[in-house]
Length: 497
Image (cartoon, rainbow, N blue to C red):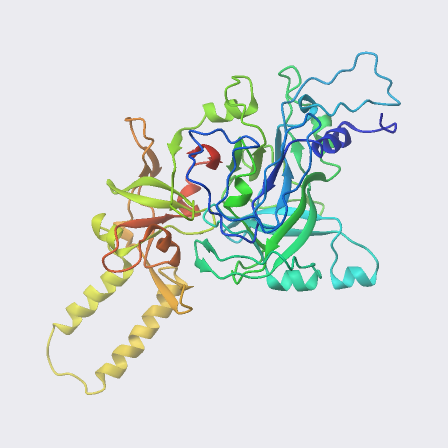
């Protein structure tokens, strides 16, 4: 029995702790899964296998019905899976006192939270009630919110070293971080830190009571309190730069949700609403507002489930996992030419290597500039002896102007040296579509889409760096957002648009 005046949200949140736990594969380890195909072997509590030997004992959290939990590789973080919703039993219920049934049928199966954009990066805000900054510690208070980039092309989840130092996060001395991979290239190992328990702020528990959607009053009541989301969250302090964010939530994070994770990108230029000078919170249940939805249970076989309703409105695209790293790739067509692409929500732009650009007939701003320069030099005539100096000055000036226009991007390479990316010329922006694998029409993301060409480190995951490398693409958020929604289901090797 529970104390009186308990709210429905508190009851669901408390029950959330008792559910079967899907332990988040260590934020500090390289995700190397066994060769067992998720499509052929169900991802139940006993089917997760990792190649790496355990460096710490697995958590022995028990489900009330005796189901065992996932085992961790090194120190892991625990997210508690949701289970099937049920109608709330109000028969002969004392309003002063509610009984909490810890059976799976009383837990939320779907939770939705706001999706934040820090610049072009999609972020999830997690609140850590037990952490504090130096300023907070001096006032003897705790509780801080941190923004994490949700990156489908990173298999190592991270936290910025400065954040770990400011919050005085304890280290896991016996669980150092192993090397990993992200769209920015290979990542060296580092220290593993314990972030602890985390919460979702403004979370909406998407429950269908007798197939009746919740009322506005019920939703508002749910959003008044933080929702308990994960326990014992750990992260690796690795040298990955993501401006404005505390770190990355990578593939290990997404694997925790059996039904998948759905992104609703919302309006591209959505601005906060102001009333009497005060910011009005956006309704993230509205399709025009960015949100992220976590499906804790794969109940897609149930035609009345929220997951099946979401899937029925979308088109399935098969995913091919890249060996060793297990990062998701899919077949796309650029100007009708089929190439493999890395599915990368952590990349603001779509990048092709030289092989893919040539195969698709894409010219870049660099190509047009070289053609213009060659035409000028072929004009002949008397040449100024200082022409080479003038040409270099003009080249530097043109480069600066091109960078200001977004025609050139400079990023850090895997060897520490800068890599230059050139945007496709205005009359050579390609069309992009993805192969659905159904033998029917491809799913179009649009035409005349600006892309960039260059050897971005993330292409190494597809063996796409170098003169002789095969055509490869990093499919970034600029193209992914051309479809209003994306439901990522890595356990089933599929994504829906």
